[in-house]
Image (cartoon, rainbow, N blue to C red; front, side, top):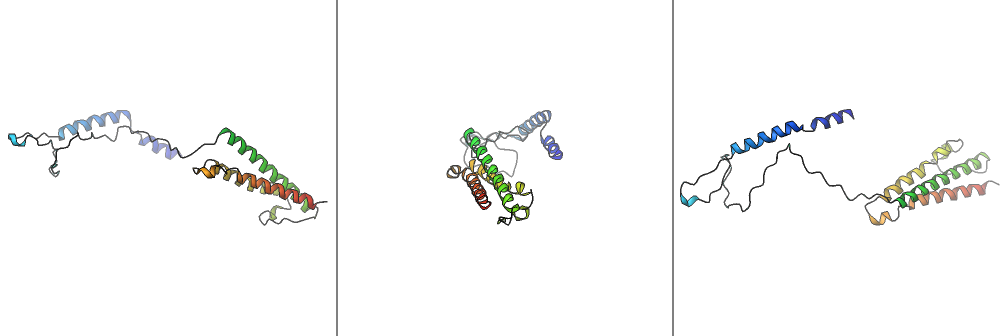
Length: 192
């Protein structure tokens, strides 16, 4: 990070150097331009050409003035911001936080009922990813991975560039919370 900052600072042109370079460039450009004077009256519409001998003369006279060359030391125009990325509204943000809370609470409820059913000997963990954590308190942390993934997915859908995807951003979080609640309800029914 320090190296990147140093490279960025060193790449910026200094204002004094830029002014000196711009003045020298303009003076050099004036010295290199020659005017062709007509030798007779028939060649009056000849054009002003550069001193370079390898440059061919144009066949037609340009209607407009040639574009002025810009020095590379002069500042450039800023790039406009990309309008494709959309931010969420305050209402969507509140709904997202509410669904996030509901999803993680439902996952905690599922973990509690699963641990209760397994420790009482009334059932076993069917999820192969959670089976190693089922007999310890680590199940409370391990079961929170799925709601976190659903939160991330819901947030990405909320700011998507595709309009029909933005309309269904709430589905992953709602589905995850519903599945956790149904699993917890099932676990409560297993324990007498």
